[in-house]
Length: 313
Ligand code: TXA
Ligand code: MG
Image (cartoon, rainbow, N blue to C red; front, side, top):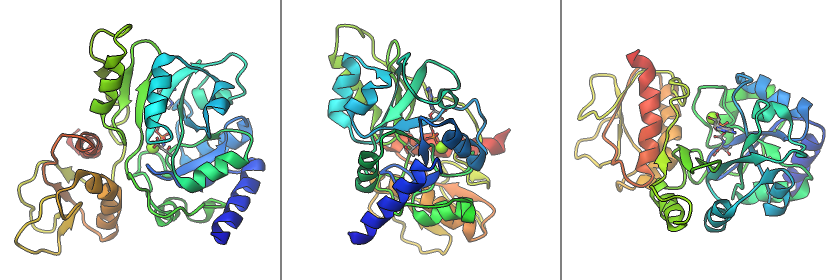
């Protein structure tokens, strides 16, 4: 407990000095800096080697803070009440007088925001007087980190500080929903799309038709473990790592279970960790069993599909 407090103090100090640090969230670890400071935010882009035109998600402690920067409406309020703090991000209109650094939004008047649930990061957000811009704490196009060690693997000693909050509980990034105009899910993630549909479609007044899921094919390299990945595999070939979700009778050193009980939440939590272990073990190819496309399985399939695509071009 005491250790956490002194670590939060350290984190506050770095952030107040426009430094960039890693923070734990329930989805994945983030590379965080003061969202009001151009200097601090620039550091995120250069450390992560992120293209300047790719906007960042800004993390807030509460609604009061958010309202300084963003316009909100009824739909947002409903979703906020139901899911926040939690693994969901919203694209909202930026207020004209907002202090958010223009680099974050690539000069646009919309912004993605979220309220992370992780206990340490909430404590941290409470103690600073600015929101935190934070993309996933990995080099662009690599796998998002879900532990302190993963962040170290990505950045080594280039990062001044990592706030250690243990393994990320969800293990996949937040669901992103665009609330400007007709709501649209832009990225599948920690909160099931079905649960979100239910709430939005219950607000019948403005949105008669079902909301759309629009999964952006932004970058095919996204979430890539950097080695070929074969989907819907029934068995693995010689020397191929085999990612499984259903327990098999036979035993093999090449088998990597995402869950021992066919549990999708557990599988999501273990996906990125497993990909890192496989890569570190020196495998050159991965096969992966069919993952049921229900609940968070949708988000798992989205990530593995993207990870596999690079190799089909
Ligand atoms: O769970 C998460 O969302 C994690 C943790 C750290 O909060 N963050 C995260 O950030 O995944 P990042 O930058 O790795 O992915 C954010 C995605 C990017 O694909 C970016 O293009 C998109 O969100 N994005 C950011 N701002 C946007 C905006 N204003 N409109 C549409 N898409 C946006
Ligand atoms: Mg990312």
